[in-house]
Length: 163
Image (tube, rainbow, N blue to C red; front, side, top):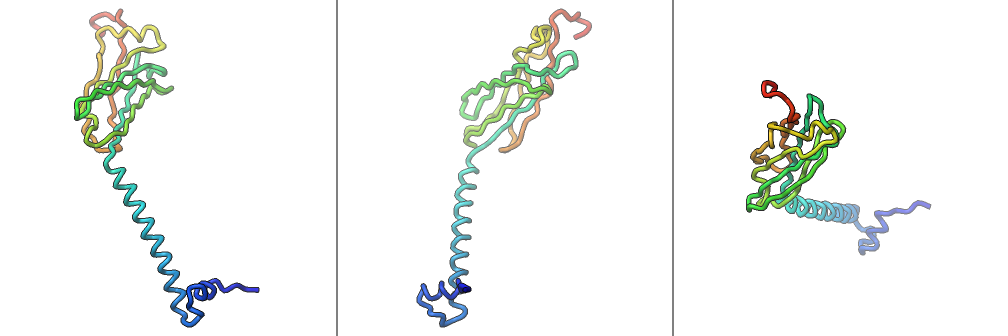
C-alpha cells in the first residue's frame, strides 16, 4: 500500500486535498523556516567569534647547525592592556616549537620575546654570548602566525674569532 505523504500533510492541516499548491506552499514554508533558523544560528556563532583573536608563534632552535629536538623555549608576550604572558614550549623532532593563544581582540599581544632555555645536548645549554632572545612586534590579524628565525646556541668555549 502506497502512502501519500503530501496528501496526508494537507489533510492534517485541514486542506482536505482541495488544492495542489496548498501542500507545496506548506513544505516551502517549513524549509524556509529551517533555513532562516540556520542562518540566524550561524550569524550568532560568527558574531561571537569575531570578538576573539588568535595568535601563533613558531620558531626553531639550532646548535652546531643542527635543529634541536626537545629544547625548552620561553616566550614572553605583553598585551595591549600591559599584562605579560609567559609561555613555555618544547621543540619537536624537527626543532620546531609553537605557542598559540586565543584572547579578546581588545587585549591581544603587542610584542613578544622568545628565547631558548635549555636542551638535552649538554654543550648547547651554555650559550655564551649568543643571542639572548628575539624581540618582535606582533601586529598580525587573527589566525596568522609569526615565524621566529632560528635561535643559535653557541658553546661558551668557542674562540672569539668564531663568534
